[in-house]
Amino acid sequence: MSAAALPALKSVSPNVQRFKDALRRHPTAIAGAIVLLLMVLVAIFAPLLGTADPQALSPIKRMRPMGAEYWFGSDMLGRDVYSRVIYGTRVSLTVGLAVAVLATSIGLVIGLVTGYLRWLDAVMMRVMDGLMSIPSVLLAIALISLTRASLENVIIAIAITEVPRVVRLVRSLVLTLREQPYVEAAIASGTRLPAILAKHILPNTLAPLLVQATYICASAMITEAILSFVGAGTPPNIPSWGNIMAEARSLIQVAPTILLFPGIFLSLTVLSVNLLGDGLRDALDPRLARRM
Amino acid sequence: MLRYAIKRLLATIPVMGVVALFVFSLLYISPGDPAAVIAGDIATEEDIARIRAELGLDQPYFVRFGGWLADLARGDLGTSIFTKLPVSTLIGQRVEPTLALTVCTLFVAVGLAVPLGVLAAARAGGWIDRFVMALAVLGFSVPVFVIAYGLIFFFAVWLDWLPVQGYRSLSEGFGPFIRHMILPSVALGVVYMALIARITRATMLDVLAQDYVRTANAKGLAPGTVLVRHALKNAAVPIVTIIGIGVALLIGGVVVTETVFAIPGLGRLTVDAILRRDYPIIQGVTLLFSAVYVLVNLLVDLSYSLFDPRIRY
Image (cartoon, rainbow over the protein chains, first blue to last red):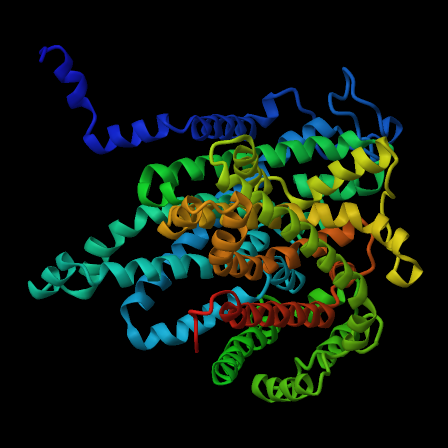
């Protein structure tokens, strides 16, 4: 063994190396990560990407075709579709990320506690079964229709529909983990419940939770677009992909590109998150990967 | 079997109870004053007070919940704020198109997805397999209305083969009915197909690795017979389960699909209700769809013993 190779090996821990190898075996996950990164950059630098004010009206320049002035054309109010689509990236990514963080953290807390307290478990699971029986789009619509339209309310409504799935996942993990010898050992050596949950159970739920969070992010972006599309989502004064498509609904025969571009951006972003999620799942749980 | 069926039927009561309690409580736990939100920005104090009374928000929570449950048991889903018609009547008028759309979608999706999944597993690594795997990812990434507009643009606007939108009842003839149903049911069915095909493929791969499949092949049965009679039959339980669970995807998609294709069903009723903030309608449709979902999955549960005689209750 040459001495020169050793420092390079030392610099990464075996876990990180294994993770990298697994990702390398999944070129689609890498592609997903790159597209997602691009979208994040687009969202951050939206004002610098040759955009105009996405809300600026110019009634005399309505329904212009694609060209030098309007890259994606202009809509029925003379707004620049390109700028609206670029700024829409911000809404989708914000909603996806916020819902993923919110739903997984709420679900994690409820799941940890119910997985450990038998009496609460039975009640909580019936509640979660009930919530899961309400189709999530309808549940979100019902929640939104009772509150004033705002991005925060959209995020909260979508997060509520995603929580039960996280609770189920965390609970099933906790039920398995609590029977593990090392947890028994911790109990035997007098560790208190909060410490057991925080030090022994929680770290082992994080990997599957991360995968789940990725899928939640993807499905939240779709739900936001659906809600905006049917008029129960992001308020009309914020350009979101769902809003742009909803406003162009009747223009399919006249100006299909107004529908096309937000559709492509939305699908591409959701696809990249899903591919990243599949890659993470395979990298973190080889057992499951072989089955799917 | 009957005892098990009754037991399972009873077990749906707490689930539906939670659904009802939650949908009802939304009016009370939502931040702000729902009556003011529903009344809109230009409403007067009297308008808000009237809506509060119509929703029963002027009564104590438990009194109102009791009355509401009693109404529900009689099939009374409340009264629409906007049209003043009973919600159950409004729903009744709109059931047919939605039922037609979901049944067509079920046929399209199950009819395509199960054979695709079976073939993908039979020729693992082949082009059908790759197609199914790609569909599984794409189906969950491209939202239903993007697929719908893609189909409309290609088949209705560009090729002019099918109508852009609209609905014809079955009573107006089978031809027009089907012509108006093809695009919506394909659009709605894609995500459902992706789900079913993926699970069918995964389950079939497991089953095809079993000893008795090798035996069947070894004794010289036709490959098709082995695939369908031996393997698919034993893979039926997970497939039927996912068909039941996937109904939730269909229900969510119906709202969007009916909007895109201007189909006057329950989804369209809901979307119109959103614009008018007609909460009783949204509440009624949500309750109905949740009940359908729970019932479908109950039936799926009970069908297991049909597919697998080893399952006895």
